[in-house]
Image 1 (cartoon, rainbow, N blue to C red):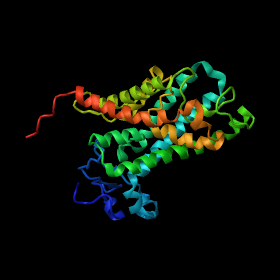
Image 2 (image 1 turned 90 degrees about the vertical axis):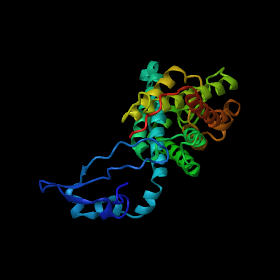
Image 3 (image 1 turned 30 degrees about the vertical axis):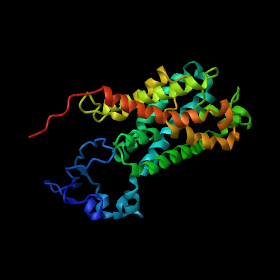
Image 4 (image 1 turned 180 degrees about the vertical axis):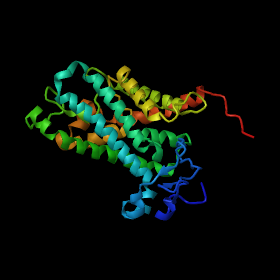
Length: 325
C-alpha cells in the first residue's frame, strides 16, 4: 500500500491536486492494491477525476457521512448482503414473472435460467471487488476449508448472505403482491394450479427421490466451484476482468443443462432465506413439503462445494509461475 492511507479521513482519501493543465481536480488512487483475504485479484485502480462539487460541498463525499469508519470496517459484509439481495431479487423475480405472465409459457424455463445467470453477473459486479463476491455460504465455507478465506469472517459472511436473501424475498413480495392476489385470489397455495411456492425456493420435481436429488445438488455445486476455480486461475485461461459474466454464464449452463430436476439451488442462502420468508405466506409447508425436502438444498451444496475445490486442486495441475528476478 502506498504511504498515503486511502481509507482514513476525507482529506486523505480524496488527495486532490491540480492536473498539469490546471483544470479539473483529480484523485490519485494508490498504485499498489492489497489483495483481500479471499485472494481474488482486484483490477488495478486507475486515476479518477473528482467532480468539482466535492471541493465545494464536502457533504457529497461519502467518507464525510455518518459512521464512515464503521461502514468501512464492515464493508465486506455489506457487500455480501447487497450482492445476495440483487441475486435473489433478479433470480426469484424472473420466476415470479413467468409464473404470473403465462404468455410465453413454452420458454419459461429458459427465461428462468437466463434470468438467474444475468442476475448473478450483475450481483457480482456490485460486490466482487470488495468481498470477493461469494454470495453463497457453501462457497464461503469451502474456501475457508481449503485455506483460501479467513475462518474469522465465515459467520459474518453467512449471516449477511442469508439476511440479504430474506430481505430480497420480502422486497419482491411487495413488488408482486397484487399479482399474487390476481393469480390465486388471495388464497396462498404452495403447490397446485395456483401454487406459488416455487417462486421462493427449490423443490424436487415429482418422482425425483431424495437420493438422486442429493446427488444432483452435490454434482451441480461441485461443477460450479470446479469451473469457478478454473476460470479464475491466472495460470490457465482466466476470464480476466470478466469474471462476473463468465460465472453468470456458468450458472446459466448449469440451470439449462443439469439443474432442472431439483431447481439447482447450489446455494443454501438462495434457498433458505426466501424459504423462511415464504413461511409467512404458507405456514410450515415450505419445510414439510416433499418429506421435509428443505434439508437437501440447505446442506448438500456444502458437500458439493468442497468436492469441487478438492477435485480441481487434485487433478488440475497447471504449470507453476516462474519466479521473477
